[in-house]
Amino acid sequence: MIKVGDAAPDFSLMGTDGKIHSVSDYRGKPVVLFFFPKCFTGTCERQISGHAQHIAEFDELGAKIIGVSTDHSPSQKAFKKGCDPEDHILLLSDFRHQLVKLFGVNVDEGQLPNHRATFIIDSHGTVRNAHVEASPAEWAGIEPELAALRAL
Image (cartoon, rainbow, N blue to C red; front, side, top):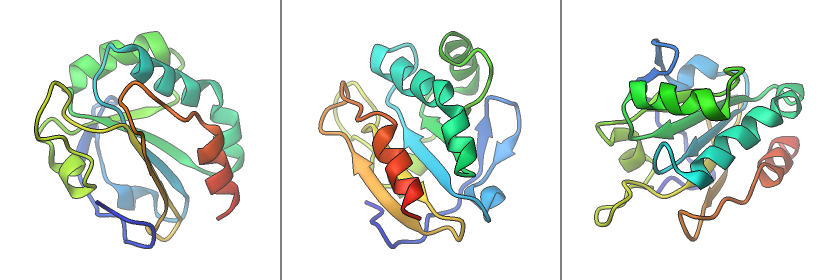
């Protein structure tokens, strides 16, 4: 798994906006990169809507919010309409499971493809905070993320 102090691996994934995105696109600003297990599930909805509802706080800290799941982009786009109708949060499709493996949050057995996890990446591309939830039904909320961003 990627650890605090590691360089965030670069990637190229399709976003819900129809464009290809890479973490290097956001060098110069901090990034909150969160992984969620599956579209159309309650905790994932809370995670995305929680970020969207507090986008002003993340904006004040200059942070880009990016969510990643292994769902295909059309599913993500349909799911996002219900939990982020103002389109604040960029969702990326990792349907080939490349990024979940690079970050070490993939799950090899069971119904869910990856753990729920959040990585705070600083403006230079270094991971400054990493948190993996103990259970896919849990989400610590935005406060730990905001605290990590304030500490940068």
